[in-house]
Each structure stands twice: as C-alpha cells, then as structure tokens.
Length: 295
View 1 (cartoon, rainbow, N blue to C red):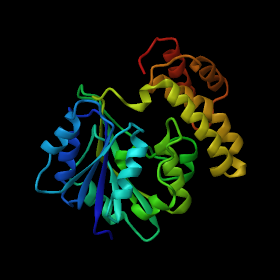
View 2 (view 1 turned 30 degrees about the horizontal axis):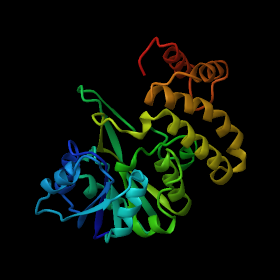
View 3 (view 1 turned 90 degrees about the horizontal axis):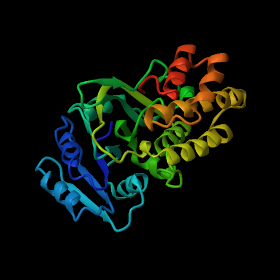
View 4 (view 1 turned 45 degrees about the vertical axis):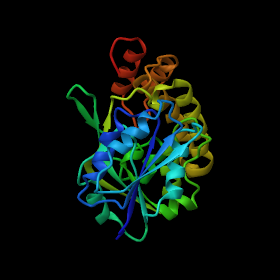
C-alpha cells in the first residue's frame, strides 16, 4: 500500500479554474504529500501562477515549475512526474476536480502487480446534466484496443517508477496521448478500476485538445496504426481495423462538431454493424452528420 502520492497539475492560462482543482486535491481525506503545478508557458501576465499561489493552503505544499516555452500538457505532466517524490503520481488537469474521497478510494485497489488505478468520471455540462464514462466492458483489457474505455488523465493514479520506465507520455502524438499511455501501462502490469464517479470533468474551459479536429484526426490515425502493429493480437487486427473508421467518425462528430466524413462511416456501419455497435448508433451518427440532431 502506498504511503506517498504526488499530484501533478499541468496548466496554461487557467487562472479562472485552477483554484478549483487545487482545492479538490487539498481536501482529500487521504492527503498527497505535494501538489506540483507545471505552468506550460502561460502568457496571461502571471495570472495563472498568481492563482496557484492564492490557492495554497497549509494542507499540502505546492511546487510551481514554470516552463518558458509552451510544449503541451503531456510534456508538462512528464516534467511534473520527473520532479515528483511520491511513490505514486495522481494526474489532475487544471480544469477538472476530484471527490474528496478519490485518493482514499483508489489506495485499497493497489497490489504488487498493479501499475495504475482509475476512478470513474462524471462529465458535468454546466447546465445540471451529467454522464459517466465507465461502461460494462471497461473491466475487459481487450476493450482498450478499440477505444479509450478508461477516460482522461484526471481519473488516473500511476506508479511513478512504472511511468518513468515506460517513458512517460508520448509528446510526439498530436492527440490520444492518454489512451496511448493506458495501452503502454497495460502491457507492463495490471490496471485496477474503482467504479465510483470520483473524478469531475467540467465543460467550462475553452482549450480542450478535443476541440482541435486536425489534432484529433492525426493523433487517432497514428495511434490506430500503433494499436494494429504493436498492441493487438493477430487474430483481432481485422476486427479492430473495421471498427476504427466508425470510432473516429463518432469522435469527430460528438467531440469536435465536425461532420465531414461521418456520413460514409455511418452508412457503412448501418449496412454492416460492427459487433461493438448497433444500427441505432449508426442512425444517430447519420442524423448527426446531416445536422438533424445534436451530438
């Protein structure tokens, strides 16, 4: 059982929301030993760093690592992990939050073969509505070959030495760095799941990577190829390859609002549904591509 946890928060121009993230780390029933905020070249005249300092409390010490040049959140997380002193690193995006029992609930799931532990995520739309991430298939490691069944970085707590050993996040990927990391972790150990919605993803920040369609497409294409060549067993390659166009179409339509290219994938899946989908999901994607329904 771990005795020390470091919280890693990457931030860029997040003065308005980072206090919420820091507060959620400070209010844990099992306190981390440190919060490391890596400022990814913010150009808001020091507002983000000032907000971090204002959010400091006596509960947990905060270390600020300022980067002169913006290099992206995955790089900032790698920098934070390299500076961490905890046995485990708990990732927290600057615009997300945790339930106060998050860390305490993950710790009992750790065993000698466990390299990472995830909580469920609740997505808050700012209008009182919410959805959850984990599905019934998340317990099956093979499902991660098809899509990111585990969620974003704020749901994860990772054994620090394992994170270092596998090289951290791949900063060459334009997107999907988290999904790639989960696949790498799965290759070297067991991922444990806590099916409680203890991570909060807020839709109130305007600079999510998922809003950049070009990065989404490029990142998925690279990772799709990597899954087929490096991770998937030979007998699953054809099936995964058939699912990938529909998955990308859904991702573009639902998370970036892009409809181009979704029509063909929807029709193909409507005629010959992949076993992981239904004709209903194809019809919904088709309607979205025509602009008849909201994602």
